[in-house]
Amino acid sequence: LPVLTQPPSASALLGASIKLTCTLSSEHSTHTIEWCQQRPGRSPQYIMKVKSDGSHSKGDGIPDRFMGSSSGADRYLTFSNLQSDDEAEYHCGESHTIDGQVGYVFGTGTKVTVL
Amino acid sequence: EVQLVESGGGLVQPGGSLRLSCAASGFPFSSYDMHWVRQAAGKGLEWVSGIGSTGRSYYAGSVKGRFTISRENAKNSLYLQMNSLRAGDTAVYYCARSTDAFELWGQGTLVTVSS
Image 1 (tube, one colour):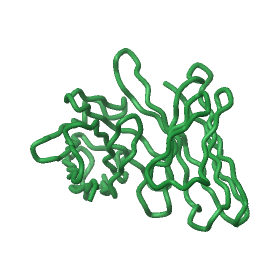
Image 2 (tube, one colour):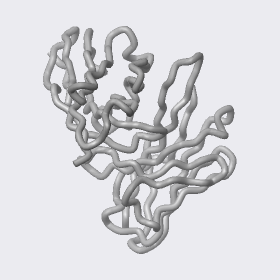
Image 3 (cartoon, chains in turn cyan, orange):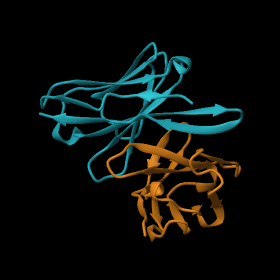
Image 4 (tube, chains in turn red, cyan):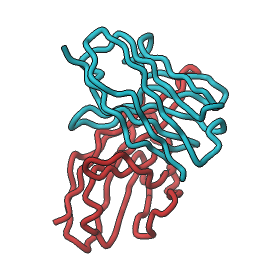
């Protein structure tokens, strides 16, 4: 099964930028991943998909200050002008098909703190 | 309004059964793949099961043989029949809509397996 690795936490100052990383297992390094945001006590909300070439497609209403990029097996979510409302858990995930069976795997999530 | 609303969660004893429902509205339900994703307290997201628009279903290894996903397009509803429940199944269960990403999530329903 694919494995997605995320650092457990990240922090930055209000108004600054922050870059989150999701690392795919090497044999799945070309896969597309998706990012979602989960504010405390809330359900997840889709942010964007990020492909291996760095192209990305955002969900409805996601502001321009959220950007996606890629380098090798790493997929990034960068957001600028950090706001208190951005304090949340950020999950990456990807779908896969093994022997005709569709499955889905998530990373362990990164908790973002706005200082 | 485009939304997903889960129901059916509650307290159940180990070995018991529970049926979750997800009511969809505001979009052509029959055209979308649908999924159940769970989250234990303080933990990350775990994909549980998915069902395609054609009715083909998929399961995580941890629930295969115990859980059954189904859909009733005429009622815009998704279901998860959970049997032989274990303490490790305790979690908030979310239903989610997907095309090539989980772009819409419900608010979740809590399932607690305890004696």
